Length: 439
Image 1 (cartoon, rainbow, N blue to C red):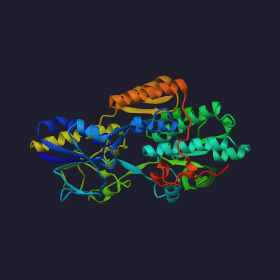
Image 2 (image 1 turned 135 degrees about the vertical axis):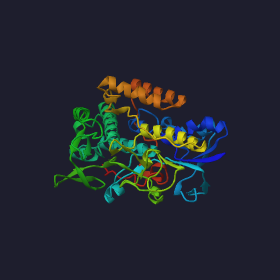
Image 3 (image 1 turned 90 degrees about the horizontal axis):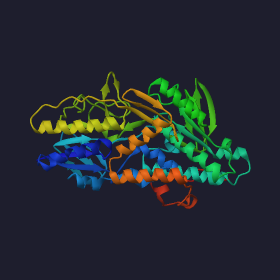
């Protein structure tokens, strides 16, 4: 019986787990999943945690429960090093040997060397990031509701998203819907022109990875919804209360009391030291069989955000469908190798994209069929609900949506942030929480 290690319980890793089940039952392999968390996050709905459309616990999946159902061992540990020569994975709390390895440890925020952003901008990668941002938005609304000076309100309620890709656009849209609904009913001392959400994007339009026509329409929808978009912007400095950026060499400064960085991701640190050739964003280059280029490791498969896979002359962006398809192929190739067969080449099937632009608006491209508007929005909802996978989580998210539609979203501060020294807001984020200027 061969020993297989899967590093990472994201989309790629969990897909591999589910496809190994029948081979585990037949006695071919013994499979262990290693992840630093004991849950997996459904990242496409992370922005909806900020707006309160879904509860945080309903988009996280218990890895131990999933592993037990699929006859897989689970280890909660953090990967520090992979040594292909000795076939060992060194983690924070132990070492693990393998016959075959699937590397699927996802990505981390790529600040592109901007030290001020590392210090002062918020990341948007995990569930606690979403909780922090939601709390800070509510806290800002609470403080602004007691202010008389409109300019002071505008300074306090200036929010910035750096990066106009899918993540940044969906986050800005959810924040905008939430704030607009709250000031209409509960924070009615704040006027619609006294808050500001701005997306800074280096490209000519937001969503530069999708087709230009849809991207242009998406930007028009965002602007019509009251979100400001600054194109061609290179962010130079992120302060606690401002952003400095350049357009064509001309420098500008803008108020920003909450800045979220969504401008790219990079591979985990340990990937740089595996010996294979990597891209500038620390993703390992792989061949058609999903094994690393330039090193002799036919038993190591690198998938998802950890890899750089070239398709039609360019490296594919790290997205969930790619990771899931690679997870299936990695399992197939491992079983083929165990059976003495040659691995087969991976071929990516591009389904399209789904991007939410806020309530009743989306841009969608499914197998070349392009849509936008309310119909696209509900297709987005149905598609992602189906992708959740766990029935109990699907039911929970569906009822979250029903409750939000019928009764709106609440604005409660369960934790007192000003006195928060050892709570979740301080423990799980490297940024200080008490960042807002006092009213």
